[in-house]
Image (cartoon, rainbow, N blue to C red; front, side, top):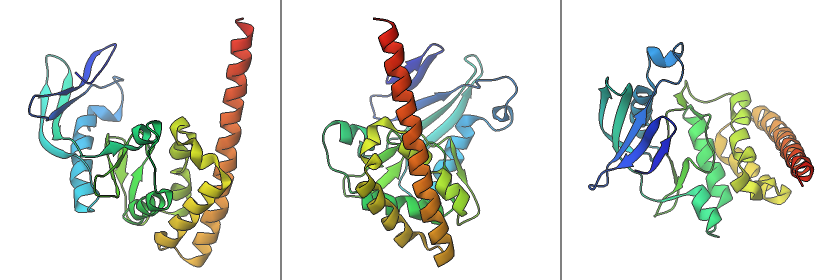
Length: 220
């Protein structure tokens, strides 16, 4: 067993190395009633493969009515999770990550959970995606608003605090703009909104840290 919650096992690994991911419907009235999360996972894996984006390889998809779960069996993506690499002191090519993100957006991939826990550093270089149920394959390319919004999970990820450094984020954004294929006007608008997003997320993180400090002080 790799992961569980209060409702039971969420992720398990078989002796063969195959991963079993169990999905449950969290609310009775939700879109998962007619499009289960497990089905979205499978469809997104197929769609990403068509876009030549490295991701997991689905082996099977089935339902367990007794447990109220949908199960996806898949072959894991080889590599190291970005969050783990940074925690271990490993190096990351932020410009290359920015170009990867730009390519996703150019192909219409909108991943609302694009953070350090769902990005994999591949053994031969480059990046891939995991835990892809919360992903949409839209008509390419993405517009400026969605491109900018998709920076939030990266900037809010505590393990990616290096992106809070102006020099690093500046390199990231310039590399993104160079690979995004946007018009000069769209590039200028995106650049402006990206820095605004950077400042806004920084203020939110600072506010959360200050709130946490006050709470901790009150318990002493």
